[in-house]
Length: 206
Image (cartoon, rainbow, N blue to C red; front, side, top):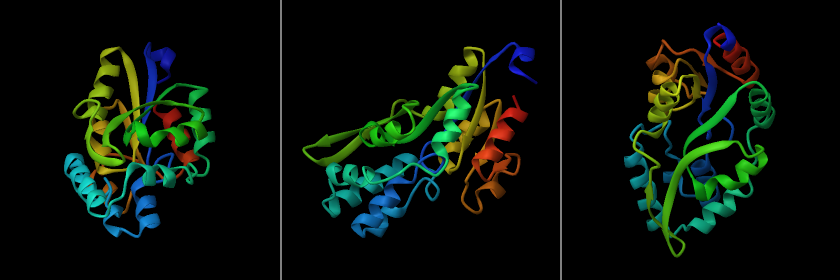
């Protein structure tokens, strides 16, 4: 069904890390040699528990925000991600719904042409990360529901445990680049293995 036929405007909601950018915490783990930081939302579905764990590891190893930002400054977005977003934005409204942080996202946003991003914020004392504030609890799911309340058709794509609530709330949803084992837990959700496949699927469900 096309947007004109349905009478509804359409918005595409995408996760960021693992979908259009690399995983920041894995890059930090590689740079510092602290393998404990390799744990991501692909491994731990409870985001509060995951961030409490990460902050404790940062504290233990005296890794400050400046170190994380210096690593991020060396990273490129995923191959083809800018073209993927540009093609999507030529057809639809696009929002990145991410559990990243304002203090991390700048270099990626520059590379991606400054898409609309909703994410969280870290609390820092000096250079030490001490806590974080979610934009709202269950940001991804609630954002989808708010767009739906505004009479948008929401199409969502994500790659991790923390995207499932967003995907289940959306009018149409698919995994993209998921880890092994996750799609098998949610067989009702299709899987796109690359950007061209994702674009074709998005147009097929519009």
